[in-house]
Image (cartoon, rainbow, N blue to C red; front, side):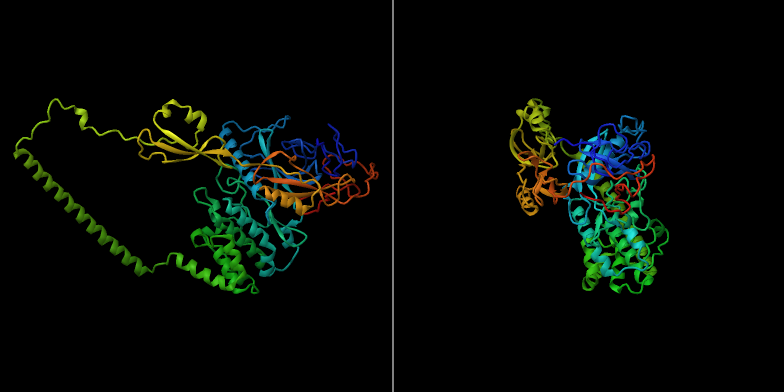
Length: 574
């Protein structure tokens, strides 16, 4: 099914080159700033770009539409401000002169990040990544539009702090989602009320993914840190970041919810730590919850609660908090008194003096032994000389043969057909599926590179088959549960979205999928399953008469109001 451009305001089809929607009168031209993609741009033949939602040092966030299923999405375009040159009318993104290498490497980081998140979403508590593709010399990530409102707005509309129990229950999906990211080696680094959305059911969803460069000061990108929520290690490129970085941010979010104010920014705390305990600010906070947040917001990662599951469990159980407190106190270095420090310095001085004496005695001993040996050589009878007929080479040790490094090589072109290896080694090859190593390349070897090996020995090589592929089943006409089970049986994930139904499909059943039946699909991929909605009355072709908005303005409420996502307005999905 060939997709056409869709009006991002009323979801009506657009003819080519039109600048005003014929259905709702929405003006497309001039809505987005210069340098960004114009409203109505078609990407990957499948997505229509809407209005720009926000911009950061890494790229631009647009509202958008998936043209086939006609549902709202969010599109993130990689466009680093510090590395990108001005974009021309051809929409191609070009790096600044001298920034080509960093532009390319950070673009790869961006693509790898969103593809990794795509593999684990839709996971509970995470904004799902639906698609990642390259176009216009850059990368685009397409995400679902979760709706709801930012947690910051939700808190601002409530004058008093929320209870610890309410905060814990609301954020539980976010805790689960962050834990899922950590299991695959990802760190969010941007957890804050601005990047958490509260849905209609009161549960929260985490958004705002970004590469490490955007969330670390001094990385080369125009960093985006969140005062009060970014961990201390994010303020320096020399500090290592890990799971405990997100744990700090989550503890800061809970602190804001139960205390009514955010923690003191980490950069300020590193100079003088004056962040008060939660119970000092709000007496209704249970003592053990206050202790948990104090441990979660420690400046030194080693003294901090280490994992997100530990933090959530501690917030849920006073008994576990007591046990965790004891464990962290035992692991933390015990502060020494002044008297202990002086005693330690004295002991070190004695040790240094003793070591110097021992070294001096060893040197004297060696000199004496050397003198005795030389004297013995001069007085001893001359030893029989080596026969002249004996070749000098017999005294030289045989050269040591070390196993070459084959890992990462292409087996067919670089190893099997390489004459320099054919006569020296025998190869025993086994094939293995791999999502990370390109097909045909060597994953590992035995013995490993650098080990001593005799020529003619056998080297075991494990060669990548590439990602495991399965045949896409035909789930058209299945119910949601049936389709999910069919896809799960072959190792595929399902992401369900409703589509408009004019009576061509059975309501509540699968209309079609993002992959055709019979196509070979990588195991672990997420398949978009389009579910037919209830049959609705046909929408009149001619909308109510309205005035056409001028450039730079938004269509009035009499028209179909432009969708939003960042400001909390709900989208229509029909």
